[in-house]
Length: 489
Ligand code: NAP
Figure 1 (cartoon, helix red, strand yellow):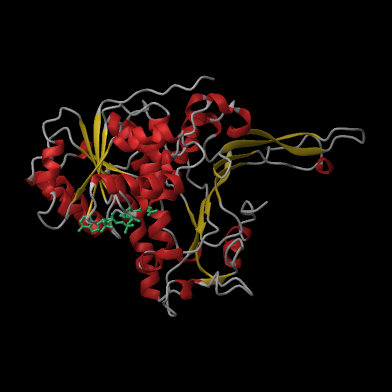
Figure 2 (cartoon, rainbow, N blue to C red):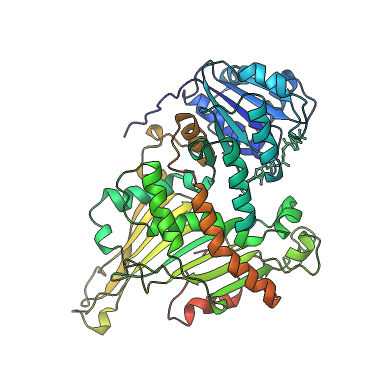
């Protein structure tokens, strides 16, 4: 395998919020890695724009520090770093006022480059920035904007945000980012499904017993307590990341791997999702780590809200009402402070209809597991004969394709989700971005669930620090004769 880095067109990328946490941790180190990979044209510019009173020199120093802290092991050396920093500019700007806009306009208008504007700021500023981009002549038909999550907090706010952005930009100019879609394995999921003859004929309720999607984190809410407590796992994770994974695993084969072909199919999945009954949802809140409460406090302490009813964990069961999936449960689960950091999609196939080996041989199921993190890879559990004498006994062995082990590291270009997605923006490829109608459909499914909790004053179940979540989540599957895959093996 030989890695191919396809150069992109000359661009200016303006990062509103270029001094913020996301820019420093993800966007700028990611761009540096693309620079190291030779993908960034030498004349391309990255323009940080934020309130902080910095000049370009000061901004370059800030980015140098950010890359030192978050650049990762693939950073490519001092000489390259200097060149990269030389491509950065900074404009002090007020998203809500006039300061800085003329300066920005002078930098970017009339340059005949791809102009991309990354809104790495609070969503409450999206409308202000879009309006000013138009006012100052930067919202021409070629411009692209990248908007971060959260995209609304319910259907009404998402609609309103879509409407605001649509006042200034066409849908094909708006890139709603969900970094899960930029992960290598997520795209590999599509390659596995639609690039092989093996799986697709079995990919339906006749052969699949159920599907699990787990996104488990070991971290707590950290410094995001105030934001998180107003959001919770449903809004922060399920409505976007888990929903997108569900769409990719369940959608019909699109006619082409092209933006609207893929997004049309995802939208159909969301619209076919069944409403979730209250007894098919478990919400949880993590407890403090015993004997280490000061370092790892419980959820309510962490968010400084002793009466909080916001969930840091959720597990739910849903179904997709269409010909392919009717009757197949989809179990979704995500939580903080769980036993391990693990994101995985698991497709559990049905039992063979009849065992020719008799009961003593044991019965086994094929399980296809797609790991997003850590150790991206795909494992297929197949049943074989246990080696050795003593008759026919069956065991499961994994057919394992761990990307790190299987693919020659010298020939694999490791691309972080953010890097990939930003390069897709420059290329004008929206395939891995959410369309406005998808986001609205996802909220339309989520809203009644959240409204139900509010109406019932639902209180999340406590769960232990470092656990698999509340015991009720285990029961959710157990009462149907199934088990979650362990977050921590
Ligand atoms: P943050 O650390 O609070 O940074 C906010 C940025 O916005 C700063 O650069 C700030 O500039 C700038 N800003 C605030 N008010 C402004 C104004 N009136 N005019 C111009 N600039 C202004 O936030 P963040 O964590 O980077 O998050 C940015 C966005 O990404 C949010 O929508 C968030 O939900 C989303 N997001 C973040 C993460 C993450 O890991 N951080 C993950 C997913 C999504 P100054 O500091 O110079 O004032």
